[in-house]
Length: 110
Image (tube, rainbow, N blue to C red; front, top):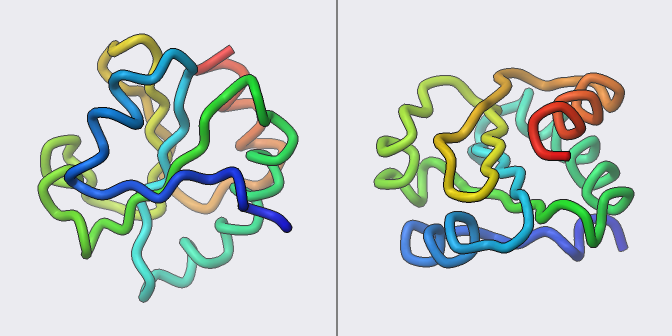
């Protein structure tokens, strides 16, 4: 099933799952009411399946977890944050196409 390898993040588990990860991490900051977020979800799941074992893919509901969203200055969603070895994250904003998202993952995380 698509998306079964995506980790659901909360304010409580963010540091452990993202900042302490040995693997590069892509975090989808989204919200249930956001239509572009819903459109992007299937792209995120497809790329997560293709990069399994190379990149960790996570999702964070910004409404349910406002502390993390504020900490990283998330103002527009969907935003994907690219975290690698504890460095400040890079990011992309908007519902990217599959090709755009793969290019972003490759250039920011691999």
